[in-house]
Image (cartoon, rainbow over all chains, first blue to last red; front, side, top):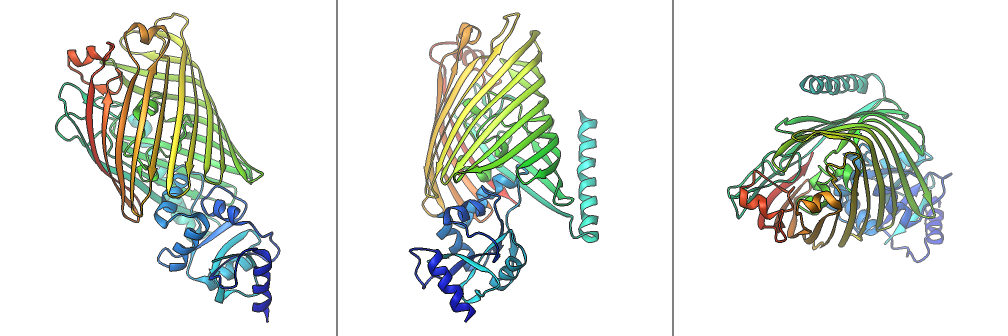
Length: 132
Length: 374
């Protein structure tokens, strides 16, 4: 039931997104939902509006997420972050083991943002954006 | 200088030790240890002069491959004491400043007093160019090296002092403003003479605006008490350096251009190191491959450099970046470099003289290197 509500929410929030979306961008239930452009800026280190959380480098969802949101592959993303890291401006997103771990971390932190597999979505977090 | 470096190295080690300890003792404290580097060889089609990547290099590449032009190694320690206080130290090993190989590039403490304001003190990057802050991190850029016509003409890369960095978002655009004040030094070789540049009162403003695929940067660095010591003593002068740069990168195509101008006022009117320089570069990514091309131009202006006979010169470069592994990029670059009196060192008499003629010598330069991060 919760899952259906959440999915409905995703459909309403992300105009143009279909229900076939595999990756859901999530934030804390009390947080405002960012746009796709904002998500790209957050994950490329340009915006500090949220604290981004990553999945492991080897996970397929990570490559797909960055390609869909930023139009960049993981090498390019790494290159962009190396610019930020080696200037002391910031650190790349913290890596968590899987979608369940990301969901748990986002549910516990009003400033956090993450991306998870649709199958892991429930009402403990707010679905902000569906990527398809 | 040696002692300074040793002290700084000790401080870095202490930071590491402190944080390693802290990581166990306190969840709020964390530390990270990272590095970057470049290993590369450069060769040219002449032995009449040596091509160099910085005015701070006393030797460069000729007909036989030289490893010193681009090779470098940097290690960095980041320590977060809590959500407000952090520290960053970076040691850099490269060929410059007359062979002082190990240098403390940065060592600063930072306080994030509000989410939009960071205050820093110590040794920090001097933001005089679009890519100043990541200039040594070859992995972060598409080309083998930043065009020397532009990136050489301000020799100092870091400064000792204080900096305030403010962030704000406005209508989807992210602004970062850096205000800096301090001092810096650099050991140079100019026209065959060893010169020490001592910038005593340095002030800098740097504004970066980022929106989507666009980045725009404008900056102004003013030095009120530049003292140059070397072959010909020059009275203290003011040194004004301004630049504007723009990047468009949509993930596939990259276009970038930058224009800088340096003006010096010298009451004794001995030397005016006045110059303009710019480059335009573009590249296109095809999977792991990225071919690119760069045109850069150097224009000496004002009475002094023109009176010496220096002409406008250019470099045309083409290259290929290959992302061989996740953390390693291999780059090959071929370029035609025109001598501008600064970009070559240890010149023979005929080669040296050509820079002060209307038709400076052109040299083909070949570079093969690997950039990595860890």
